[in-house]
Length: 125
Image (cartoon, rainbow, N blue to C red; front, side):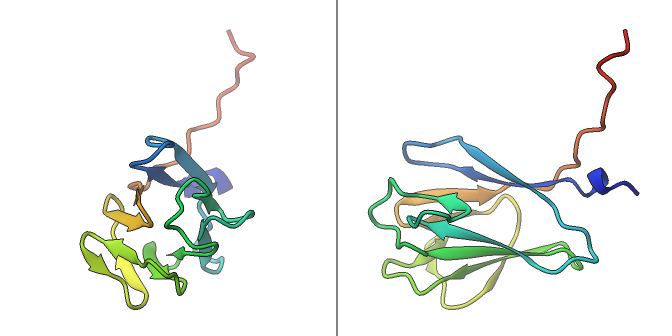
């Protein structure tokens, strides 16, 4: 199995001024540790929502566990909360790809997994 076969993790913003924007990261292999994506207004967050005044500097985290191919969502002690549907999170919860969740006023979605595109040789005619 090549390193490229791990695929990509993508998160799509589903509302707000960046509605439809998709952010992507390389999916870690099962031998690697958890991958954490930070969400907030602070510079350096993996998913920056600096346009949303209801979002804390460090608002929430998406954690991906490659050994079990599981995503989790957790609030990082934000003032306004993190929601899956109408449920405010009180701890770390499993997050199924495709499920909408809200941070501040912004709805987001972890996209269903997809494989990395196969490498092609563009020099061939």
